[in-house]
Length: 495
Image (cartoon, rainbow, N blue to C red; front, side):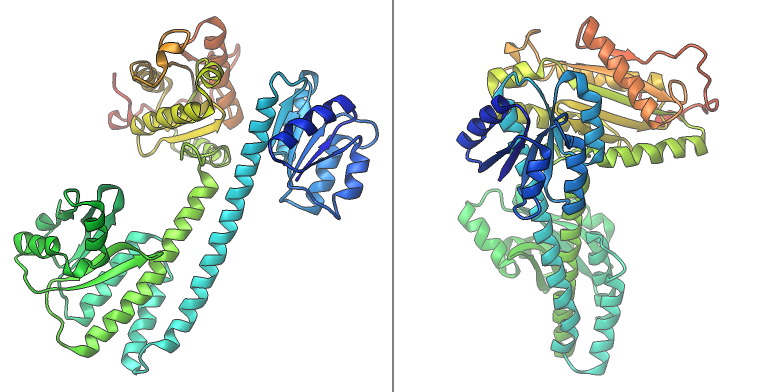
């Protein structure tokens, strides 16, 4: 359900028809006051509202809607003259804004569609949280379903206590390996992680096993048909490939396998490199696996929820919210350590033309591909984020302006030389990016100024040419907060 709030009848009529044809339920209101009379009783999913109207303004309506619900998404409609007000509305909680008059109603539909996609992700997030809650309830009752023997209960409680201290998948596995080895007097145990995209199982962690043997050990099912592959992993304990690998790599022909399944799919397998003849120990290990399975699922779900909160769903880069938090942290860290922090601000040249000629799906593919290049060419300590549309930002800790410019030029050449689909249709005959570079403390005193300095440099590139890297200029009379220390060679970007 979409509500359109605008004092211009022609605007309401155009949007009513366009959104109705796109499959939305639409109601229109000539004023914010009229709309607010209906919203508390019949709340919509999305509101498209003009800013300036007789009586209550669009900003006031946004404030009143936020008092009622955080779930109703607000899209501000504004003319160029009131762009600052629209940006103010974004800060107050509006999801997006549209310029009037509309050049292309298709852009309006795309904006509303993306808002719906965001709502869908929120609903998914709620479902995941509900699943986590159910799993946690299952964990609390697990103690009453397992063996009543005091020693077993104590060990299971100890395992659960240790597992509850972490939400990391690898630590969950490590805790299981160590405590299981105590039950079997320091047995040798492997954890084979299932990698569905590679159709393989790889030894990712181990206890009491020669590290040289573990490195690179695993099983590949690439030669099997899809049907045979599914059959193998569904009964991994009986897979001949597993038996062959254990004999060749670890010289073990006797072993016990405990599969680890998540959402009815194999996540991995614990392999004990010896037979287990003591039935009490075997029963306790089976209980251990049930406990670990629940905590493993919990860790996977929490990681998914965390990624949904901080990452852009299309490119999997960090989103603007996470970027804004991290840049403040990095600025403070830079002040403490006296090492510089650099910012690369870039966007894709003529991206609108690429979208118009090749379609939005091709445009999304291009965004994903360029995002992958940025991640691949960046250090683990760099923060690579999509700020919106075709605009991206990279924060480079322990990097001065010169090093950042070298990194930016490498990335520019990498994009220019990549054979993207339909690149020949672009104005220059290839896909390119324009880049602005700034550094703290040489160009700015705070996070906002650091981003603005890089953005201004980018703007100068796009005004004068494109497909170029520009360094931010230093304002007249500008004084650094401190004299930065030389960047260690291992941290610097080399030519």
